[in-house]
Length: 244
Image (cartoon, one colour):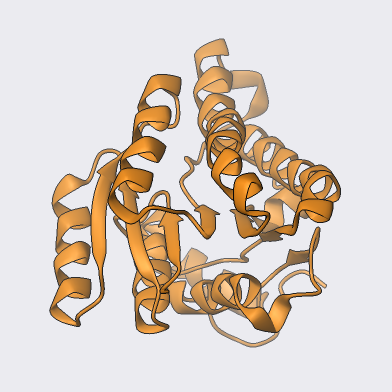
């Protein structure tokens, strides 16, 4: 039986590369999207054209009823969820002293609150079968912090703590929980950066390039494969040596 992966934030950027990588590896793919429905269905169609069983599902991580409905829909369509990739998240730039309560609520409700509540819903299915893999997408800023991105860094640090604690709690049930903390990845999140700023980031990276969505996708796929059967509660950081 082919395994099923459910990926949030799969309509673009890193999520798209994760979805396509899992499909190529023989997984059935549940594509979670919130705002970019058109892109999500384009990815679904790309996968289907390559004989990969896939479907797109709307999910709003800030809305508990939405994520419950999404999980129920994925289970109704595929029968099981073997791997959950908590990839969806939002960024926030600006001085901490300029942040507002609504900024805090949006970032944390989405990046950590939604991730935790969605994981809880998916866990019920995994616990019944006593198997499963969960990969949470954090960031190097969740490890070391970034000036001007305090809320984002704090929410991604929370993802790491959540990963470690849940890994200990679910290990005896055969469920592995790991984290991928990407470095500077060349996606739309860098669209506001100038070429000069991008060059500066490359120069700070020992491998002398920006990361790609594929770099992250390969790390995620590894952590959901049988090659990582003895790995849980760990942070894998594809960052080109930016943070060592």
